[in-house]
Length: 115
Length: 117
Image 1: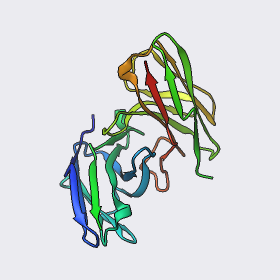
Image 2: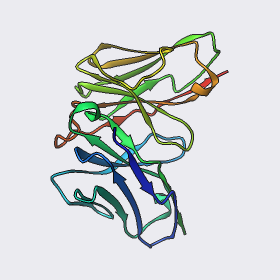
Image 3: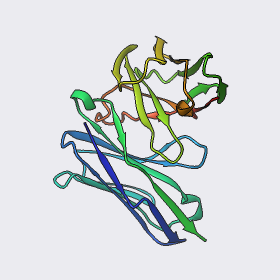
Image 4: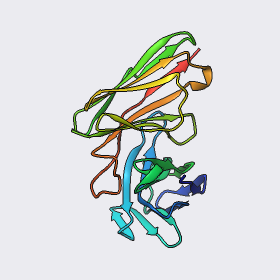
C-alpha cells in the first residue's frame, strides 16, 4: 500500500519568514495530494490540494509543488503569521486498486510561528 | 453547505457498553468515511462507503461495526471496546471515491471524542 513520509516533524520560524514542509510517497499511481491544517482539538481542514496533472498550485500565501518523477510534494507558506501555528498533514490518494479513495497521511509537522 | 455533522461530540463508555457514533451530510456526497485519530498522530482510515455500500474495511476489529442507512447518514456502532480504542473519530465525505477527479474534495466533520473506561 501507499506510504507517505513527512519532514520535518517540527518547524519553528519567526513571523514573516517562510516555512517549507516536504513529503514523499511510494505509490507511483497516486494522483491526489491534499494538505491539511489541524489546530488543537479541531478537525483537519483542507488548505490546498494538487492533482497529478499539475506541477504547482498557489493560493495567496500558500503554494504546493509536485514532482511526480521523484514522488515528492511540498507545502510552502510565505509571510508566516502566528495564526499559522498548527499541525500540518500531507496526504496521498491512489487512482485505483486498494488505494482508491484512501487517503494515506504523513506523520505531521508541528509548525510554530513566533511573533 | 459544506458541513459534515457528527454526534455526540464527546462520549465516555465502559468496556461492556454498546454505543453509536452518528454522522450526517447534506451535500449529496456518495462517499463517506470513518477515520480514527490518536493524540499527536495522523488520521487513520477505518472504513469507506461508496453509494451506501462498504467499499473499504481497513481490517478493523469487529467491535467496530459501520452502517450506512442512506446516502446522508453514516453510523459507527461500538461494542466491547478497549481503553486503547479511546481516540477522536472523524467522519468525512466526498462527492465520490475517486479523489483524483477535479473538484472532488474530502470534508471532515468535527469529530467525536471517545473515551473508553
